[in-house]
Amino acid sequence: MNFTFFERRITLDDEIKDYAIRKIEKLDRFFKADSDAHLTFSEERGRFHVEVTLHNNGMYYRVSEVTSDLFATIDSAVAAIERQIRKNKTRLAKRLRDGAIEREIGALPSYARDEEEEPEFVIKKTKRFSLKPMTPEEAILQMNLLGHEFFAFLNQNAGDAFAVVYRRKQGDYGIIESNDGTC
Image 1 (cartoon, helix red, strand yellow):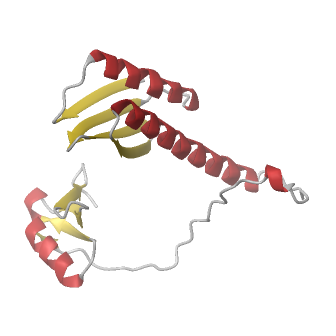
Image 2 (cartoon, one colour):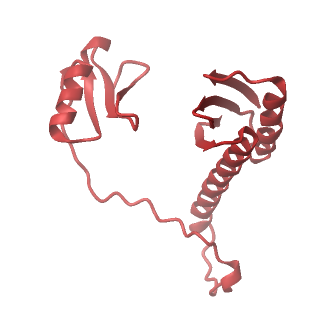
C-alpha cells in the first residue's frame, strides 16, 4: 500500500504516522492489487480531524472523522472505512450471485440474515438538457438562481470542457472538470 500524508495546521511525529500505517495496512487484506492511501490530518480548536481516502482498482473509499484524541480518530476512521469496504464487497458479491445459479433457497434463519439490507439502485427520473458554454462564475450564478446544489456546463475557460460546479458544506464552491477536455 502506498501512503501519502497531508498535514494541515498540525505537525505529526513518526509515532503517529507509524500508528496510522499499521492500522490502515490491515485493510490491504481486502484488496488483490496494490492500493493508494491518502491521509489528511488537521487540528481545529483542540479537535483532531482525520480524512482517509483509499484508491484501489478504480474504486474510492473515503471517510472523515473528528474526535478530541488523535489515536481514537485514526481508529474510528479505519473502522468506518472497513465498514464501507465490507458493504461494497457484499453488495458486489450479492449482485454476482443473484443470477449466477438458478435455484430456490428457503428462508434463512433470522440470525443469518444481513442486519442492513442494501437497497437496489433504481433510477426514478431521467432529465435531459443541453450544455451551454459559460464561465464558472456564470454557472454558479445560474445554479444559485435555480436553487440547485450543482450545475453542469461547458467551461469556456478550459476550452469548452465538461465541468460541474457545486456548493460545498463550508459554504464556498467547488468545480469538477474532465481531464481530457471532452464530454
